[in-house]
Length: 90
Image 1 (cartoon, rainbow, N blue to C red):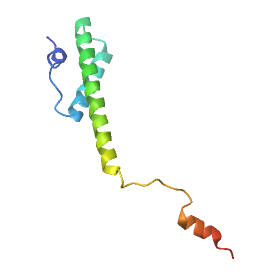
Image 2: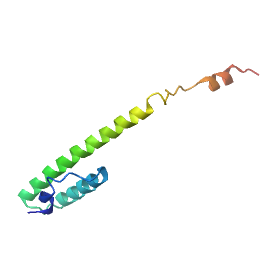
Image 3: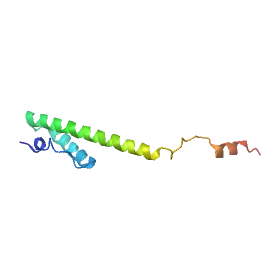
Image 4: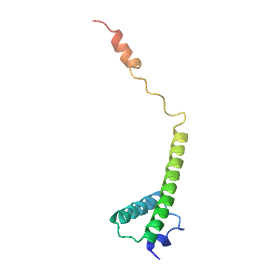
């Protein structure tokens, strides 16, 4: 059994660990030296890791939105300072 196939059921320890493992799988598969069965196992593991990473990023994005709610305001180019400068005539 390959190293990739043995990790199929193991959840990643963190986003960073999942990303590192995914990069390793991509590199190994790009080498083209894996037998078909191991390539399929690597593809399956890669798909699982991709789903995990996407979910982790979505969760982080939602947390940021909650933190920003009510704190950030829309940027209005040409705000009060700019308008005041335009009204001053020599």
